Length: 261
Ligand SMILES: Nc1ncnc2c1ncn2[C@@H]1O[C@H](COP(=O)(O)OP(=O)(O)O)[C@@H](O)[C@H]1O
Ligand SMILES: [Mg+2]
Image (cartoon, rainbow, N blue to C red; front, side, top):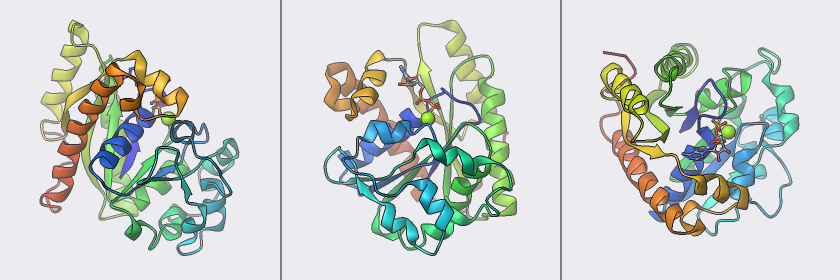
């Protein structure tokens, strides 16, 4: 599952980490692949040792080589990580690394060891994001309930369609997750409805609320539930979001949900 948005700061990493936590809660085996040179998911998962990173994996790109870069996250059993580092940025120039299929090849066989592989993407449709989408079966789009929310979601879904048509026929848009929702704001409610009208089958309910505990948990490298009572509430929201996405992913894989109404 690739978590995407063509913009920074909307909550890709937060959603990746929240879904990883929800899957761990269900007893699933999860691998998080950090594809963002900013390495925020890596920070949030707090690994003890990192020998190889996604940069090494993309540089090598032999069949199944990603297995060598897997490290245990710091969240206890069930959540593993392939870490990122800033030098990964060098791989993000279009056409630079030759192929959008390097990650897919490197992950061959590796995903079989897990119930869920989550890929956190950088904030652009560069070479790295394309590699993530080419390796994924499902894409989750993240947006904020602001002025550009609908346009942002549209662009990300268009990017998914382009990758599906050119490199990865099995790719499917699974959902649009709205992050940083403040239910008391009329603007947020309006934007929510706008997305609901445009993508009734894709919008994921509930939205992720704006909560300062999210930043604290990520900075401390712990799951949301371990960051106090308000964190437990965030964890429960992600349980629901994960449940919804999981149901969609396991129900009729043939239905196309990617087109706006
Ligand atoms: N729902 C939220 N409530 C409060 N802070 C949030 C929320 N979602 C994200 N943040 C914070 O906003 C910043 C950007 O979020 P992040 O998930 O890193 O976005 P992206 O990965 O898309 O760049 C981070 O500091 C994160 O902790
Ligand atoms: Mg991020």
